[in-house]
Image 1 (cartoon, rainbow, N blue to C red):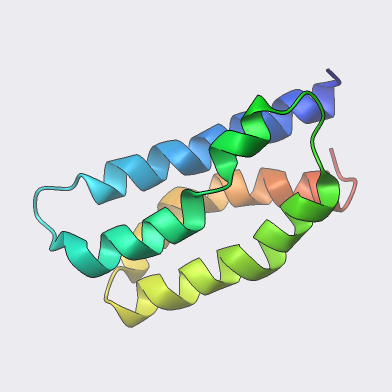
Image 2: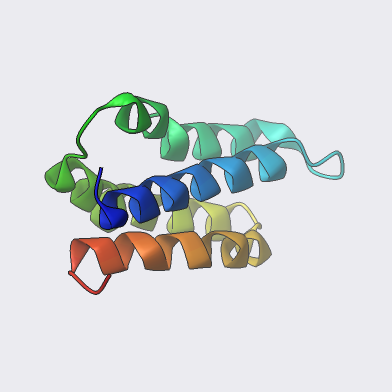
Length: 100
């Protein structure tokens, strides 16, 4: 496993971790939030199990699923939670655009 793959795996774990923290926040109503977060997270465990990362799947995640998650979190009133994901998304972006 390359250094870049280790970094992207760590970033994906970071995204998944933040999703779990937000989803279990006792001060929020979970229904809409849980659905958005589950949609955003559903592929991450599968990718982490693979021996080699599929950059086209991760690019789709970054360019489509991440954008959808951002839009939905803003729509349902959780825009402040987005900052928790940004450092991890930046690593994914760097991986995709060869900045690592």
